[in-house]
Image 1 (tube, rainbow, N blue to C red):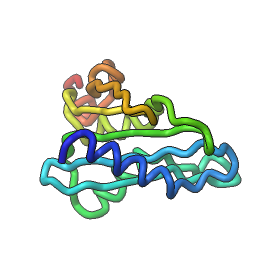
Image 2 (cartoon, helix red, strand yellow):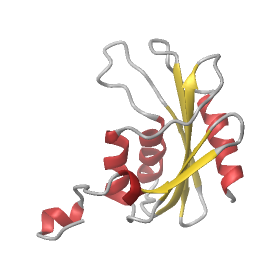
Image 3 (cartoon, rainbow, N blue to C red):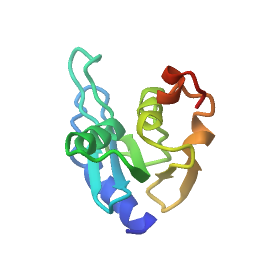
Image 4 (cartoon, rainbow, N blue to C red):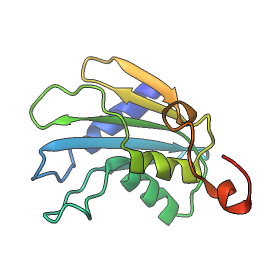
Amino acid sequence: MNDNDLVKLAFDAKEKSYSPYSQFQVGAALLAKNGDVYTGCNIESASYSPTNCAERTAFFKAVSEGVTDFAVIAVVGGQKGAEVGLCYPCGVCRQVMAEFCDSDFKIIMADAKGEKHVCTLDDILPYRFGPSDLQGGHS
């Protein structure tokens, strides 16, 4: 699975977004190290706080299937009906990534024109709190 394939799956997932309140649709495609791909979309709630992001939806689907080793995620998003620009993971999603991913975990943000910004988890969350912090170490 190459980056372009993963981005296409993220765009497909975006179309399943349940975002009647913000109209901001997000899709994600998460590639596990075993080669399996898990997609997710954002799912909103009228009371807002139970809303779940696309990235976390993909991670939670994978973890619920027993998969916890990941290689890369593609994220796309934008206002419904508008051209998709680069959409970066929120802080909560970054923290979930820190729970399951190494510092070199690759994150791809893509827009409708095919432009991509690729970074690592360490780039977007350099001072994260992770499992090793609970064991006296540092992430």
